[in-house]
View (cartoon, rainbow, N blue to C red):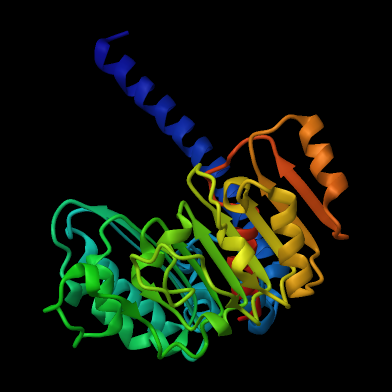
Length: 349
């Protein structure tokens, strides 16, 4: 048999195999079409939920960014963008320089616009070795009448004077300036860290939750309306609406503890470093409870102590709480009560 004849027979065999495969492919394509038709007719339960239910599920989504919800499908994107409660909380962070701050401010403006009429939550944190323009921060002040939760944790407090507004004075010295936030009628929860209490004045009597982290009592002069350099014993500090209080300070005992000056008749939850209770822990707590006449439900004391010492303190605290505890060591992380303050404020929205 010649070479030409062999190649022709090989070609015929290949064509037969190709035809057979094409028939099998046609059968598979028909089967695929039937399966696709069945899938197209299937109704996924989550896609059958009314928009109102999906929106409520999104609200319970948790602390993750709502922008994740806009990336699932077109319907979820529409629902997320029209659910104001998802966009009520913004965190502004700057580290070392102002680079990257402008996009965050612009994003905050977008989120607050999507939040509609919802009360807002604002957190500002960061450190800076160079000047952060107050004008950048002042844009956030436009919405301060809607703030319900405010958390400030910055090492350089100068930019925070922008929170007063775009017309904030810059002529006076830093030591004499304060950030007085008076146009915040909805503000109920605040967390201030480091030097923030030395420079910020809030409508304290309307707060229901207050967190003071890594602060000294003498760094809170404006809560007691004292001069910043005052060495006198703190006067009575009335916080009539306060329900939750967290005070986490640097390790140092005080002869006149900040806590002993408080009158908090509505207090339900208290978390405090033992260092903030002075040298007579039990007496300070007794004085607070008896003077405030509060019905405390939750008490946590952060201290370095043994189990035996903790039991001794438990036995001497003359108050009935549903939840009472003493930590074995100082914890500088975000407290459980502080997390609850944020969650409660957002749950109400």
